[in-house]
Image (cartoon, rainbow, N blue to C red; front, side, top):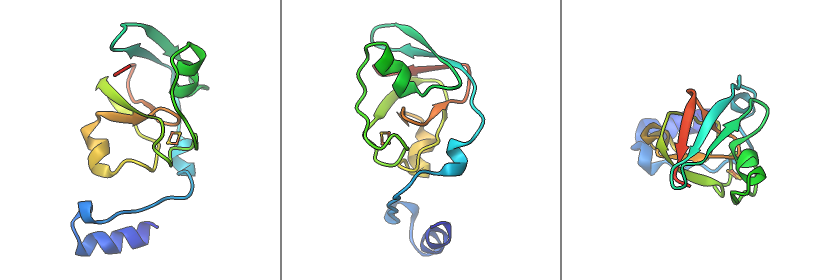
Length: 121
Ligand code: FES
């Protein structure tokens, strides 16, 4: 996949190259995890995300429903707006340009790269 994407990107602008994944990025999912604070921007609620749980699990476990499907960062069902904080993107759904913008996150697999993340929830 990386070879094909690299060859295509050498000939066309990045926004013209579309890639569809059928599985998670195992290397990204296995990366180091740390706990962080999750704030819900609309209600001001603050939740703690431990290193062994996903944002989606913490939200659903605290009565904040989040739609999920693949739970592997592939389908995009769980996309959630980000208001503050930097993301540790571990999905394969967002493009490099979208990741750089930092205004959306796949809460089933991605995490905060710092101590705090504020979501548009
Ligand atoms: S549930 Fe599929 S990307 Fe999160």
